[in-house]
Amino acid sequence: MAYQVLPLTRLIEHFERLPGVGKKSAQRLAFYVLNMPKEKAEDFAHCILEAKEKIKYCTVCKNLTEQELCSICSDAARDDKTICVVENPRDVLAFERTKEYHGLYHVLHGLISPMDGIGPEQLYIKELLLRVQKNPVNEVIMATNPTVEGEATAMYVSKLLKPLGIKVTRLAYGIPIGGNLEYADEVTLYRALEGRSSI
Image (cartoon, rainbow, N blue to C red):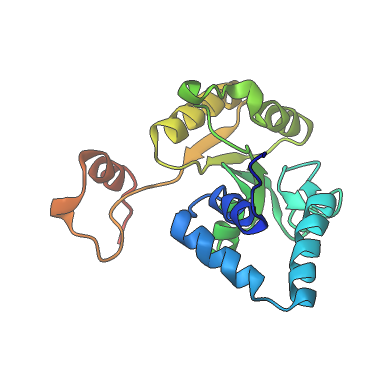
């Protein structure tokens, strides 16, 4: 007799595939879904399918949107001479929460990582170059994470943009508020020194 996978087991396995969800969390989520009223479970499933069908990449910045242009690219009040380059759409949300940045974005959807088989051609770098050639900008802010892959991606994109006469800047990284200097690593301290400002 063939082994049959129970619906509960399959549900747990699907939740386990989500990033950051371990076995215990997957079980908790599966049982939560099972205890939902049928209408709420159907609505939950419908929301997932609807998001998959309707959400796409903005034709300009590659952020997530339901329209051809995302709400940021279509906002005439934004500074169209500054582009902040980020790794993924979650980074856009993080910057928008600050309410301090008023320029545009460009989402790469990943970082250069030869170990994972991800090269520049798998990212939206070519689209960024075409974009700045079509609509010249004053500054491109490289806002990739301060990891080996983030640094490599920032340097690679910077080398492609500089010959176009575009000012390329990098986010200042340093000591977090409430942090202790004795526990900071050398790279963090160096970044803190580099990004120092007048008081």
